[in-house]
Image (cartoon, rainbow over all chains, first blue to last red; front, side, top):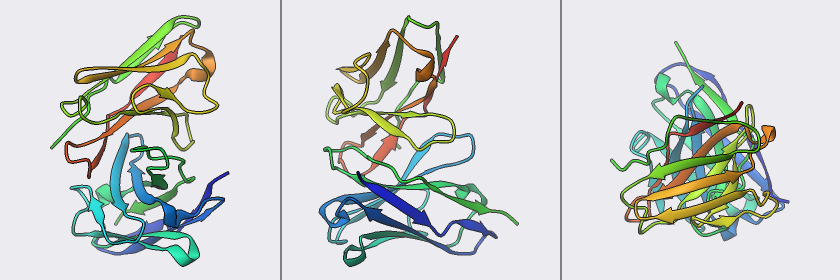
Length: 119
Length: 108
């Protein structure tokens, strides 16, 4: 069974940076595109970014383009999200998940890690 | 920017049928996926590629598609089905993913 251990969340001030990690087990991440999805408190799901198996192609949501960078380390079965210039509205639970184990689907999901941006 | 539109809430009594819709202009060309999210938990995919049921999901869950609307149907709703449901698809290029705003299913 695929599982993901997420870490790196925490409380930061506006303008600061944070790096999230997602380590997979029971699944070889290098075989799949990977995604980050976030959920602000009491709100819906928002897709953040996708990265291709070899890291050569990345796509970002409009609200994070230019500030966030998705990357991966296939040798260590890991996915990352570097978040710079954080804003209060980036406060959310961030989930990692493969994209495309089933064509087009984001599944299964990690347990999520909380990022809080506050002054 | 592209949007998927869902009703904010649906309420049904146990044993009745719940219908949750999701509308978007690119849905005739892109598959849709449905996720169930219970309070405090990560989302769980229940339907993929419009109408395929994920392994382990009860048969009362089904999906369908017609034009710019996809529909999640729960036949014979049970109390345990109370959750938020989100549709997901892609824009016309297939490169950017999008979620609907979510529908809160209340079992009366």
